[in-house]
Amino acid sequence: MLLLCATPIGNLGDLTPRVREALSSCDAVYCEDTRRTLTLLNHIGIKKPLVSCYRENERQRAEEVVNRLQAGETIVYVSDAGMPGVSDPGEALIQACIANDQPYSVLPGASAVLMAAVMSGFPSMPFTFFGFFPREKKEQKQILEQLKRLDHLAIFYESPNRVGATLSAMESALGDLDAALLRELTKLHEEVVRGTLGELATRYSETAPRGECVLAVYCRAQAQENNAPDLELLLTQLLSSGSSVRDAAAEAASVCGVPKKEAYAKALQLNKNCFSE
Image 1 (tube, rainbow, N blue to C red):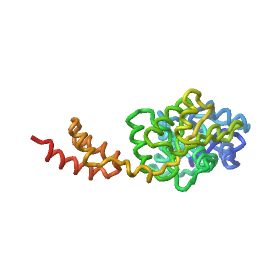
Image 2 (cartoon, rainbow, N blue to C red):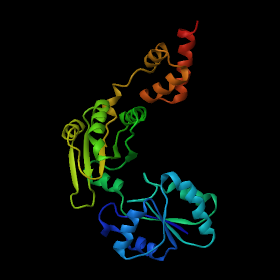
Image 3 (tube, helix red, strand yellow):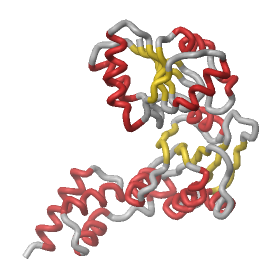
Image 4 (tube, rainbow, N blue to C red):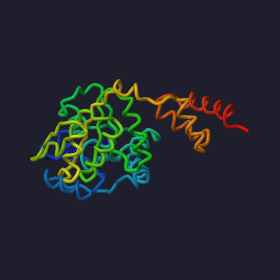
């Protein structure tokens, strides 16, 4: 069997007895970073063969893991911290097990996402986890447009060096929503800093927070509804600026929060009536 095991996100005391037992009894440990996992195994006094399995080689390793499972071995997979498959490798391993009818299970434990949702102080049901905030401007725009239509808690991972810029981008797009920065969860210097997006952006504009960070933003879609652009007007502007029907429809659908088919049909109609010779 393949066992995907959650590991501590900071405090090594959060390793569960089930995960400790799995690490002790397995044939090999596949892991995101062998150095990080070796530190964990040394802490609990366990020696096991370690095999590197990270994002870039996960699919190749998945075939290898399936072969070992078919040979009767028990394999543990751990990411650097937290739950495999949640902004970490692990998904391809499960897909390979399903495709090859091999057994797998997940052993629960520490989760920065769940901890941040509760510690933020905002209503935590429902919430949406987006993983790391994108670095590319185009992808950022797409995420920010989604947040404009969201009416509950949104959670992001973020590098401490990018926290200030991310908060500023969010404030510009969403307004001064309530938010919280959670850093060093479960560690000695654990901290929750609450405020508006603008307040937090100002605080971290020049001095980056230390340690691993999670951003929690309490999105309020109702405050954005009156600012939603008119679909036909936006399509007209995009088409007149030289965008193709397909590109204009895709952008307008994202900005206005309408189905792509609806935006495409409207774009075709406008293009035929107003922009065809």
